[in-house]
Image (cartoon, rainbow, N blue to C red; front, side, top):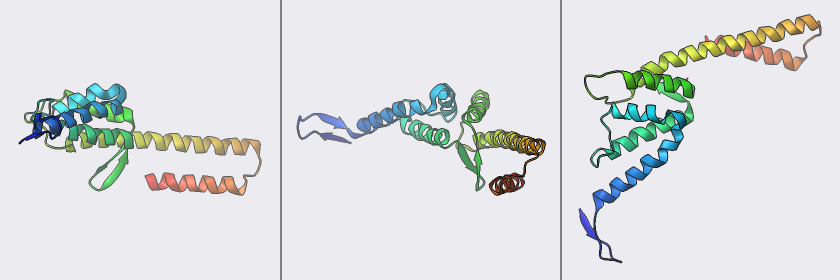
Length: 167
């Protein structure tokens, strides 16, 4: 679809203008990934998305979705939300980017399955660190032989409930 600019009479193709806007969005979103930008780009290539005029919109959509993932540091899989660190996302992207698929990827489900394993490992490690910290505080309290304040008791109870609920 071609139209003429009312100010300068320049003939423009609407698809070219739209493509330029998508390219600008791709350039702007790259800063979100930081040092992991190349991994995200390699992952996007698994979808067959490139900067060619016909596929730049698909590339923009994929990069925006990955940007939201990096900013939120969480994802939803089978109606459950999982927390994952940026390093965990980078590990998952490395696995997916280096895997050879027979066909192009259609959605993020394979990445989510890889991230699921990493997120569960991260959650388990965090639960162990929390439990160790709680036990250290309890041991320190016993050694000092002072009674805990009501606030400390309530805080410990809340942490124990949280640890039990995570399991």
